[in-house]
Image (tube, rainbow, N blue to C red; front, side, top):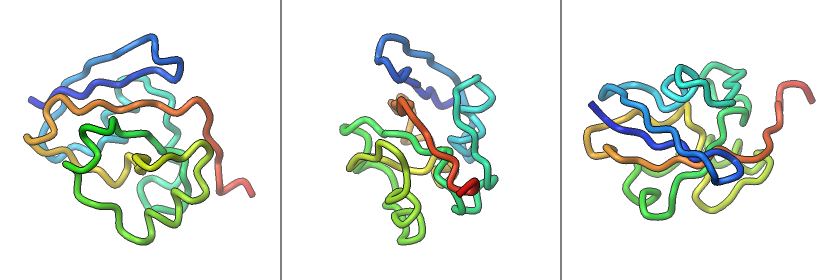
Length: 111
């Protein structure tokens, strides 16, 4: 099992959940009750699954492709370590991953 640590937007609450290798970070987050919409269902057509990866983990993930980078440009509150959770498939090497939930999100399909 892979442990994922979700940090609340205010930074005061951590929820640790277990996932399986190959699971999508978005699905794991949604199943854990995290407030990630995922409107486009992983098609990189919105940024409603935007998360901020802890700095110490960011470089351990596969880099974002250009389409993901383009969507992150539209994400509210995006940072250097922002990713779309729908584009992260979990691997055993991600055990202990720390994911910050952004304080705000924007549904880009509604524009």
